[in-house]
Amino acid sequence: MDHRRPAGAVVLLSCLGALGLASCSAEADPEPTIPGPDITGPDVSGPESTGPEATDTPGRSSTTLAPHTPSPEPSPTPTRASDPSWDPDSIHVLANRQNRLDPPDYAPEDLVYPEVPQYGPEDAMMLRQEAADSLEELFAAGAEEDMHLGFVSGYRSFDYQVQIYGARHAEVGTEQTDLYMARPGYSEHQTGLAADVISIANQDCMLGECFADTPEGQWVAEYAHEHGFVIRYPDGMEHITGYPYEPWHLRYVGEETAAEVFDQQLTLEEYWEQDPAPEYDEPEPNPEHLSP
Ligand SMILES: [Zn+2]
Image (cartoon, rainbow, N blue to C red; front, side):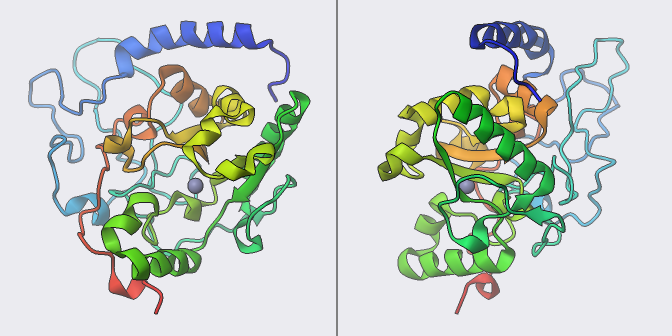
């Protein structure tokens, strides 16, 4: 829907907006700052917590997730466009190494093929309807600026992830496979909300950090949020997201959330005030989730 504004104005307005929000909500530190009896939030025991409850807590529901319950002080309550969800059908579902999809073999029901230039395998070219519509808008907006974007990977099913994770695992083992590839059930691609994009004119750096240096990579970094996408794995944030810089991996979260994440330059984990997810609790993947 955003198709009007000159780039300079966007950046300026965005930064002004960020100033107001950052001061009250940007802290990633999950420790409550006001001592008192009202520490009733769900397990926010600190960044060193490695307990097994993080991935498999059965009682999690989308209604009890705010890590900070309102304090008794009448301090200004930071507001944000969205809270994280553990409902896999939510566009705000959090999937990372500490948050497996539930159920692990979840599959969206509204997958469609976005009508954009496709350069990947056909069985990985769908997105959920809302994300597909937005990707089409993003690509159309880019085309108006002479950006030549290609779509190389969208929804990947649990079984598909079993195949590609298992194949790589058989070759290089757990540590090397985990470095760049999510275990089955933990992949954001399985949500149908993640899209890997490339610069068509620079296919030699498909899915490489060099994408960030292409005109398309720079354009996406600046404008993806206007269409509801964030750069999910920013540079230097591996200790929080679990993944090295992936300037090509876009995650759909809706325009309001994407705008705030962009303005505040946060990871989704920080924005939603969730624990960092640098690694899995289980040192080895479930052997049943590796292809034979
Ligand atoms: Zn990706």
